[in-house]
Image 1: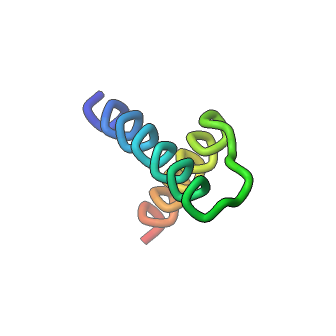
Image 2: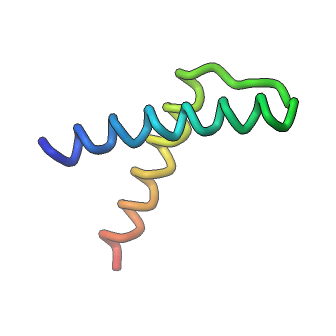
Length: 53
């Protein structure tokens, strides 16, 4: 349960950082849901690779 909570908190932080960087670099800003979805998928893919060894 703590892992899921940590993933949610870190994904919200990552979404904030992505949106902040997009504003600073003056590039189109992704939606918060898109940033969170991509971050969660990447984390789960890396975790799957870690489990494989």
